[in-house]
Length: 563
Ligand code: F6R
Image 1: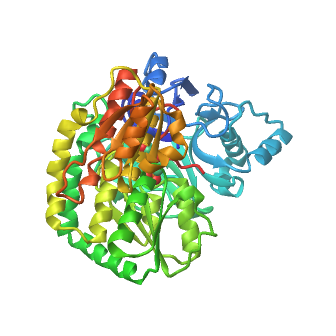
Image 2: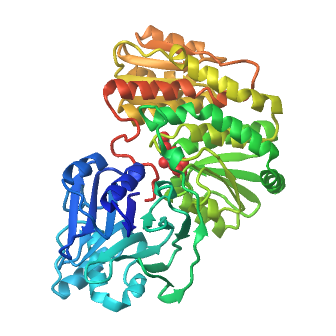
């Protein structure tokens, strides 16, 4: 979590940093801050609690500066306070640091700094970094010998030429982008402005010193050469395109994403080759493990069900954080990991476990430059473009679609018909689930088999963006316990299908309100892929009615890079 953005050289650097941070806000928005060099050769730090709007309101003037570095935070250790927000500065205010990740030996570092009469003022591990950098002076490239953990940070020192010192251990991303007169740092490529034309990505163990005149890189303390790669910015894709929220925009992109996936997966030679390789791996596997978190886990549940049903192969969906060495794994298995961001720490941990058992790993991933994509043997891109709203919508549909293409047991015409079905479902969504006039206190989504998994995903969407208690249940399970919760303040949305009538009758008999969501069409066995849309729209509308910004629900962030 957390986002780092910085710029060096060029014009309007404070404004540019705020713009970059806004695009990284999905990574966390508990607090934010910037540091820039003043004309009096000082570092000026400005911080605010809350999101980038709160920070922007704190910045009364935007003087010209040679360098600006910013951070948006999702608190892991240390409460959400101004003192704990980044940038953190050294005891003498000479060095400022923004950081993402965790310094595991923070307590030891703190004690060692205290022995040198350097007392720390905050509760966050980050504060040790500028102070250790100060002590290291010209040996900064040995910083990895002093810090343990998974981290990436950027620092700036007022006594040196205007520039950044960067360091990375583990998989958390940090990219350096070059435009004609400015160098940028960013945790995500999507925050780079359109002027950025080339790119360097930091690897595990790298450090770098970046000034306007020269860039030097080191790996584990030894000098290395890193070359600029050509880069095209994503700027148009990060626009809201006339929608009020990214969540609304992204739900409405589902038909286009489906069209793109169906065309590319049926025509692109590289993707066709990868599909062939996948079928080869699948044919040798005695069991398929699908590992993912949250929404991606719900896609995994559905795909596991379809693999068993259509291919008659054993398939088990695992919540990544529950997958352990004891999960009966060996090299005869195949693993499918699903992730939008490709940076989810729980899923990366699964990958390490699977690799230790020599299990081939296939990723369904939206961010193909991500750690999960890179660490997998075979990666199938989800081709959704950036998904910025915290609640995942279009990528859920994309993961299901790509999974079904890989299962390879469906009629191509049904894939082709799916985008039109997505369009009519979007059009009719508010008729299919009409929001009740009064806000229900609790909501149940219920269904059977695939519809039960859709119910789980629907409930997750509603609870994430409306803060309403909401559960997904298998239709026939209600009577085994949860029915005791049903009363006249309850709403049940029923994915109508075979054997859901009893559940409807049981809820209605206890005064609960019921909305029946009929199947979209009996003709297309893939229609479940877009049947989630009405629940996504329901969550969006409820959030807007409640005055909640669905793009930034409280306590959450988009890519969960901590365990
Ligand atoms: C829910 C949501 C999360 C993510 C989960 C996994 O709307 O977005 O539940 O699905 O954190 O993230 P990825 O897919 O990036 O691995």
